[in-house]
Image (cartoon, rainbow over all chains, first blue to last red; front, side, top):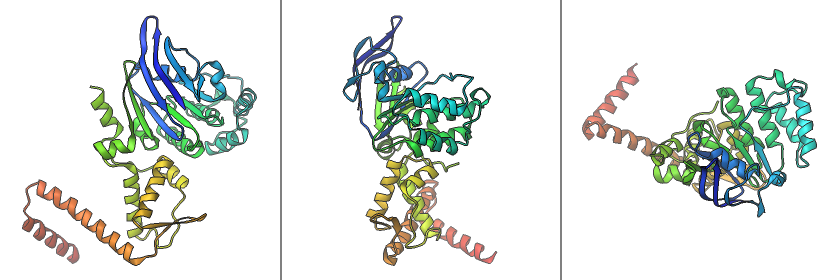
Length: 229
Length: 124
């Protein structure tokens, strides 16, 4: 379970998050949506323990989120950073050596699902295949919390489709919390249980996506347009 | 790539509707096994929790039966299949009539229109 209580985060005096309360339960894929600079990435970094709140508490399974929370949380950064000298296989083995919960067998299954070769050099991979590799590295960790910052951003439709399918195929839906930030709402809306809208550091809405359709007759985009006004 | 969904209706209902239509078209036969939740989920890019809900409502309406350890199957009960066939017909007609009335057509005009259309289609 993820808990944020009264969380405020300031960067250089500017509030990125403002007194945010949020509780997330396992067994769900949750989308975090909002404009650039609304606080999405900050929220993920705080849960990953990569940043600390200016005020308030961030807990994962009752433990304070510090750098040591990495044993419960896998984090996919929106940055495209990698070690160019690695092969795909080398990258897998490196991650396996860093995280005791890393499932190499699952990683190899995902590589073949994504049509990636262990022997390919990471620096020669296309952008789309680097995006796929990042997904493999994140989903191969057997941890209760998966955080993904813009996993579809800047990738072509074929790659986005394969990433969505790999999410469905390889996450452990009953036991994991998957929190995804994205602008590509149309592609991902079918796989979300819940959606959270964030604006200027405030959470302005939190819904079950199917309830949104049932009770309000709206998809995420229409709902967002309404709450964002 | 997967089919799009309408944004104004829950996906679990749209999926159930698609399965019902596949049964009507004979693409899924009475007694045939439905794909697993995971397979349907991957095929249509839909959350497994949502597909689970689809299978639940299909079971509640009697269209599908889950057999322990074997999966979910299309019912072989002709009465249930017939009543689903009737229900879908009424639903389609209802939405057609609503659209026509919305545009100002009277009941008689609609009726004549359909009759004429079907006769022409028969001749060609």
